Amino acid sequence: MPLHHLSVPEAVAGTIAALLLLTQLALFRSVVLSELITLYAVQSLFVACICLDVGLVAGAWDLIALAILTFLFKVIALPIYMRRLMNGVSTRVEIPSKINVLLSLLIAAALVGIGCLTASQLPLKTGAFLPIADLATMLSIVFIGFLVAILRPNAFAQVIAFLTLENGVFFGAVTLAPGQPFVVGILVLFDVLVAVVVFAVLVRILVAIRSSAATAQLQELIG
Image (cartoon, rainbow, N blue to C red; front, side, top):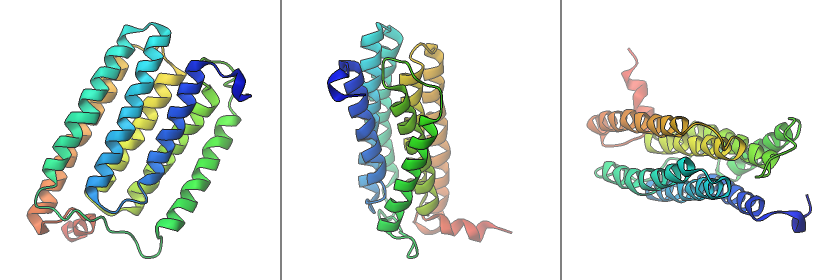
């Protein structure tokens, strides 16, 4: 679609989709846990913004409320909690020697291409927020989230990868199905809460063993 034909909601959705993808790719560049947490907070802020935008355009109070909850929980509360968990833990994320940052980005670019190709083949021709581009963004973020979890052997990094993956699903759900029930959005936030609780337990176990969040230590727990 030519740029001058884009409506304001479409332009906002497209811009936020691009920013979400950039923050997801930036996960590969960061080797410090605090940077990963900051990237997650920034990405969550973009998700809250698109939820608010869709809510205002559709006149849906539930989406506006969900945007506020997303901001309070994902942008403020959760990053603060994760930073507190980092106390006493090595803050550096190990990078595999065989797959460096450049190779990781090339694989991620290929995954983005797969996401775009997949979305373009699906019958999503109408919608107020560029449905094909939004679906491609959602798939790309999910694919890259899995890749980050695979290539970063650190409990903090893997949980953040999962949380960003959830951000992608949330973005797709809000833009592709803005009329979803309010309870669905709340359940998504509840899933994040459960993941964080599991994450906190795992980190405490790892720290109790060797004061590190590296998942390689879990191999020693195999009987």
